[in-house]
Length: 292
Image (tube, rainbow, N blue to C red; front, side, top):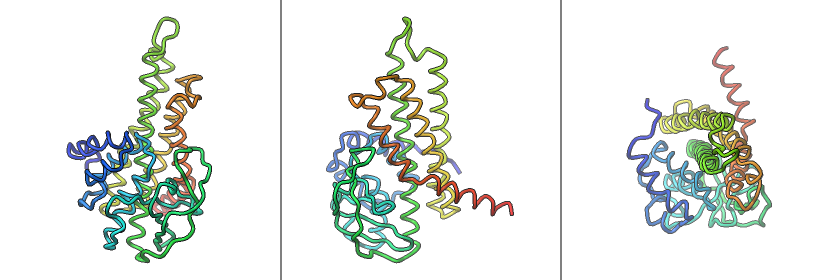
């Protein structure tokens, strides 16, 4: 088992960085990112990280990685042609629901899908364009397909959180390299180096766990526990990266005129959607069962 991306997977992630950064949905459609190309979950991890790094303001991961494979497995054409499909969270709260054509609900062993509808809801990240969606028709009651979609949704959250953490760390490294105090770059101070090293360490621990979870999802080997572990580690790493980023930026890190807040708020929103408390409870229960 090699929990590191291959050259091909790295090339795929590099290919989508520019359109993701530009939020160019049509370019992504033209690249067949949403087509059923037979890509595995591990193939897609780098792409999902790139989506997080870009903080794209569209339901990219939900469309390409969660709804797309589910609809393809069912032979449903709504996954084709560049349709945007958002994924409803707890209580029907749906990130990017206002920008979607369809909204997918994963409720227990049932998947439902309906036309996007609902009034905008205020969230910590205003770019989420979230709505509350409740109306949807049954898409499938196949527990295996729904379980696979739910696992992929968790995996997408974890990968995006890692990407967001990397973006905040990169912004901070660049800033402390140019910001001078006492006639020296702030980044040369030992305290700042320690903060950035801690942030990097967390991300470097989380990233292989995300790849490991992708492998577990592909091979259906203890996949639920692997995904929960990946989400928890990625959420913690992104949270810490954001905290260190704000501290190292100083006052400018708090301003909406500076771009750090965009990634920080997206990380907060995804961390909330990830429901890490429930995932930690499941992990603890699973580990206790192993030792009994």
